Each structure stands twice: as C-alpha cells, then as structure tokens.
Amino acid sequence: MEDQLTQWLFDPTIGRLVTVLIGIVILIVIVKILQRTVSRYVKESETRYRARKFVKFLGYIAGVLVIATVFSDKLGGLTVALGVAGAGIAFALQEVIASVAGWFALTFANFYKTGDRIQLGGIKGDVIDIGILRTTVMEVGDWVKGDLYNGRVVRIANSFVFKEPVFNYSGDFPFLWDELTIPVKYGSSEQRARKILQDVAHEVVGGYVEYAKSSWKDLVSKFMIENARVDPTVTLIANDNWMEFTLRYVVDYKERRGTKDKLFSRILEEVEKSKGKVVLASATFELVGLPPVQVHVGRGRPSSK
Image (tube, rainbow, N blue to C red; front, side, top):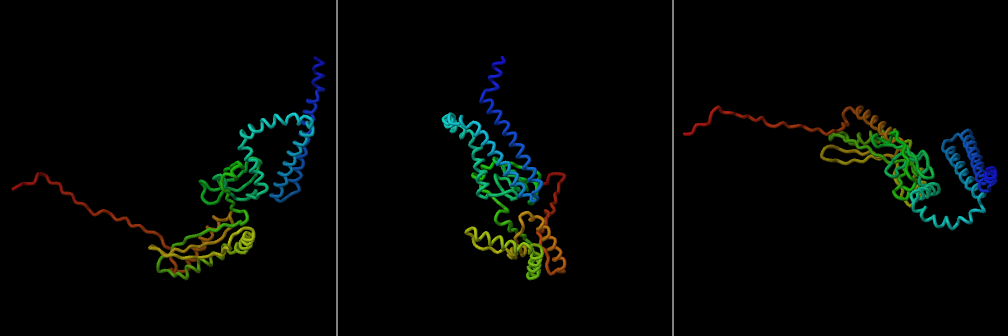
C-alpha cells in the first residue's frame, strides 16, 4: 500500500497536473488583482471596461501557455488523435465556433462596440457587454413605447453577425433622422404655420446641427455616400382634409422621445399664441341615425269587398 502511494505521488503526470493547477490558481489571483487595480485607477467607464476585458483575455492566453509548456513533450503524440477528433468536434460545436469567429469579427471589424445601440437577431437595445460567445444587450422597446429600456437583459450569440443584418444606431453617425406630421386646418396662415415649425425646430434641435454636419462629413469621407441635409426642414402637402406639414430633423439616437415631447409642447404653445391664425386640424366623424320607422299592427284581418 505504501509503495503504491509513493509511486502515485512521484508519478510525473501527477506532478505536472499539480504544477498546472498551481499555475492556474496563481494566474487567477494575478488577473483579479490587475482587474481591481484597473477599476481603482481608470475612471472612464468604457476604457475601464476594455482594460478589464483585455486583462482577462491575457489571463486565458497565459493559462494556455502554462499548460502547453508543462505538457510540451506529450503534445506530439496527441497530433494524430486530435486530427481525427477535430472534424467531429467542429461539427458538434459549429455554433460555438461561429460565435467565437463572430467575436473576432466584432473585435477587429468594428461592427459595434459597448455602448452602441444596435438591432441584432430581432432584438434592439444598448450593448452592455461583448463576450467570446455572446453579446449582452439591455433591450429597448417591445411592449414599451419609444426607445426606452423595458428591463430585459438579452444575450445574443455572436454568430448572428454572419447570419443577419447588423443595425447600428450610433456607429459612425450617432444621429437619426426623425419626423413630425402636423395637420393644419384650411384657412389657416400657411406662412405662419411654416414659420412656427421652423422656429421651434431650430430652438429645440438646432444644437445638434453643427455636430451632425461634422459627423456626416466624416462619414462621407469614409464611405461612398453623397452629402445629406441635416438642417431642420419643413415640407407641405395638401389633401382632402387639411394641410399636412412634415418637420424633418436630426436628433441624438437616445433622445428621440424626449425631443418629440419638447417639439410638440412648443408647437402647441406657439399655435395658441397665434390667436386663430393657425388652427390644428382633426378628423371629425358624424354618426347619422336611421330614419324613424312606424309599424302599425291591425287587430283583425282586412275586409275584402
């Protein structure tokens, strides 16, 4: 019994496993210390997040190097076995492999980054983490109207970057075009209505214009795309019911709902100040009743002559 225990304790393979275990434990401790140091001294959230992820990635690589170094003389004999098993493993883990490939694409191809608002795999939200296998998104919309968080945290496989379109609301151009449609009653002053919309637009969203122009200029220099107008514009069409004004403007991708609230509030205030020169239109439906029906019921059968 003692001889077997001694033989087991001095087995080279057991010694190597213990060495690997100790090395991995030391690496885990070092990674945790470095991540806490980064969190303490790096104040900017995105830089801190990326630094912590980079330290963790280095820890994985260091762990692989420790295992490869300790078992370096054993790896040659495993080449044939690994080659035979590789095809089966690749088939069984094709989704995992595609997700890892998606992570490499996200890292180097700039599909999106943490903090971006995206739509991927039918889910729209803000990216809060990009892992090796999955992207974590704080979802917006669904049963909540407007671009507001609904509270669900969704994890989407990175492989979707190869399967479906990736919509990035805040990538190279962090603005969206949005529109308001305002119906104005016939007989109102068309010039006064147009001026109200233009003045309110410049007041509420005019601050975005210069930054949007600069961002769009960078986009034009980077891609094959024509220049676009980012100043607020007002257009008019006339239909059978009213004059329909459309206000088109650029807005920060996270401020769409709040900006609409400000625009509508100011427009209503200015329409009220116009003292009847501008009147908003609305659809009115009149329900017409059925004509009265008189029913006469006789007591006997009519006589015949």
